[in-house]
Image (tube, helix red, strand yellow):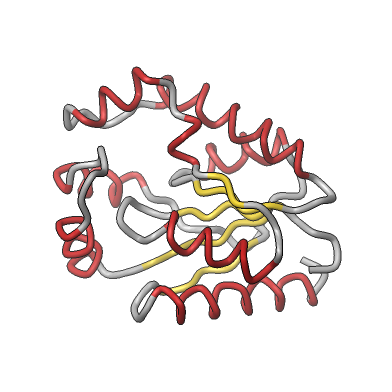
Length: 172
């Protein structure tokens, strides 16, 4: 991509932010960072216990991701971050104004099935309802693209990279 933006892969749990984020980073030739790695231990413990995070819990996490994104400006990168609310995305943009968002979307039944099939992740399917209730999709004035996650990870990754390239070609 011409200006090597930092891409934030967003969406509810189970949409494949990690898998698709890594694939998109490979397609774009930039580094990938796992957003979950930016969570303080207290957040992981809370989610592991099935307790949704509140906005206060999320602020240090969002700020850490924002610092990473700011450090990648002009060089590009991809980072996963649920970024479910507009206010969270605004906070990320305050740290790194050039970030663009890749919103991974999918029907609840598909996402729940994928979450049930994956192992070793701290986010239980019980929190999916709270994720969908919190989700505020990208608005028209937000730089980004939405991509449905139906299909193989490879196909979704290719569609996502193509969408981001089109966004870049449109000056977005």
